[in-house]
Amino acid sequence: MSTPEPLPPYSEVVLGTAPWCLEAGKVFHDKTADKVFEMFFRGGGGFWEIDSLAWVGAPAFRYYIRPVIRYCLTLGHVHDPQDGETEDPDSIDAVAGILSYG
Image (cartoon, rainbow, N blue to C red; front, side, top):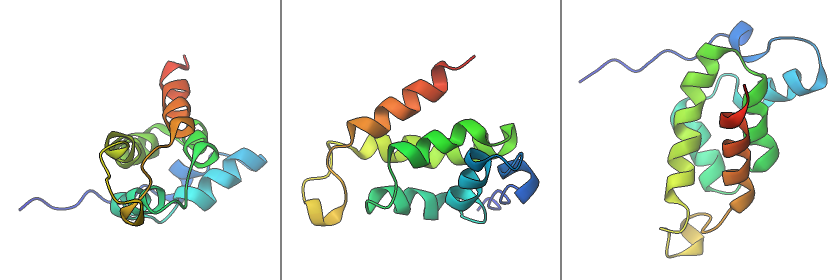
């Protein structure tokens, strides 16, 4: 059994004092990958929360993009809406937008 990857430190999640940086801290800081996945899967996250990934440091991005992509891969495969979101095209657009930066 492998050791869980440590959470990114606050300094890697919040890179400044701009509102969008602070929002990224509210969304991601001190959350495990499983908690982030669960937040999106249960409808507590969406386009703006995923867009916050654009404002985190590289180590935090690498940590948090995985549960976000995992969430996106579940879309359309959930048959019971009580079990989670079934469609969320805005979140897919947010991920695509972030990955196209650069």
